[in-house]
Image 1 (tube, rainbow, N blue to C red):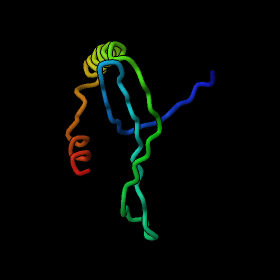
Image 2: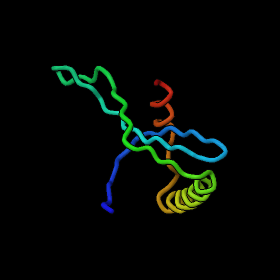
Image 3: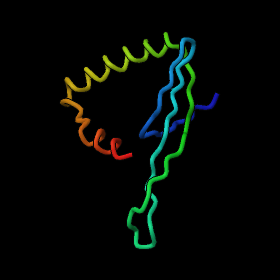
Image 4: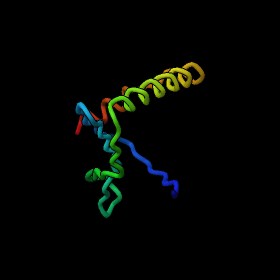
Length: 88
């Protein structure tokens, strides 16, 4: 199987009793002829379906790795991310 690397800067999560659906997205700016940003286009780049149990395992692994990252590099600032996403 070929290894595909996909970049995403956003995601959506939907979860039910039997399935978790993660939809990864990319927001890209749209420029006018003067190179001013006039809009943003959101594109789905990957849909991943997993069990709720696997979602919980991944959550634990991510939490531990983020804890280690912040221990080494400092706290991840979510302020700019929160402000950016609240505008949409």
